[in-house]
Structures are given as C-alpha cells and as structure tokens.
Image (cartoon, rainbow, N blue to C red; front, side, top):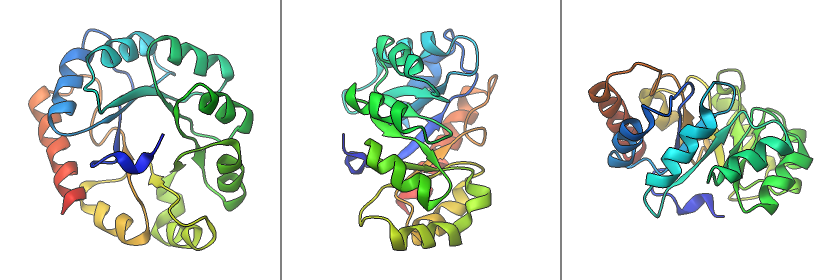
Length: 203
C-alpha cells in the first residue's frame, strides 16, 4: 500500500469508540475528508467498531486498529475487515505479519534504530510517537538519515496550529487523537474539529 495516495494523510484515532456511535462518527469524518480511521484495541468494542466502520467506508478509505501489539491482534483486526495496522511500538515480527496480510503498516518508532527496523520489517509509514518528546527538531534529524520519501506521521498532541511546523520539518501526515475525538463528543463539534485539521493540512 502507498501512504502517499491519501490527499488528506491524517489518521483519526478513535479511542473508546463504541459500535453504536461508530456509524455517526464515521460519517462525520468521511464527510470531512478523512480516509484513515484507527480504532485502538485497548478499549471495549474496538473490533466491532472496526467492523462497522469498514462496512461503511468509501472505496478510497482505510479503517483499522491501533495499539496492535501481537500477531493475534493483526488477525483479529483483519477478520473484522481492518486494513490499517498501527502500533505504539516496533515489533518486527508483528509488522511483517501485518504487511503479509496486506495491511497498511504504520508502527510506532522514536529512534533511528526503531525506524530502520520497522522499515526492514515492511512498514509503509512511521508513526513518530510520542511526538511531543520527539519534537520538530527530531523529525528533521530523522529525515536526514531515513530513505528519501519515507512517510513520517507524528502522533501525540498534534494540533491544527502545529501542523504547518510539522510539515515544514518533513512530516507527511499525522495521527490525531483526543484533540479530534473522545467518547461523548458532540457530532457538530467533531465535524468542526475535523474541518479545522483538514484546512490546516491543506493550507
């Protein structure tokens, strides 16, 4: 899979999304232009929410799981229709398994060693986590040693106002968590936040 195919390369991280809320939340995000939706597995109902979102996703969208730590997690998400693999860490065997299953793989890395291990295992994009501690300067430094064109997605505390600085440093996308979605958020507020992120990225 090619992470560069997405006109809006922002991953909506939907931690705590319930299956009952998934249709409305998914519709709001797809309407705003989001095409990468991640439901972390460390909350109840995640697999069913992935199944719901995958069933309603536009043809150009990819839904999958976050906090995917094991081969079993990969298989469970794939069985639910998920095609996106996101993890907070770098476990080459798990990355390779997800890649072999045809998933878009964005494992978490924080150091050059992890970054190269992830790429060697088949990662398509690198989730820079936690972005707050890596910082814009860290992205610039990583960019100088990684293969040209490596997709870099900072995750953790990324706001619309910060997106231009991340892009200038070499980020090619980002993951957006609680600044975008938290359980109980009003749909109009979610739509406004999603539109703000989309506008900031495209500016």
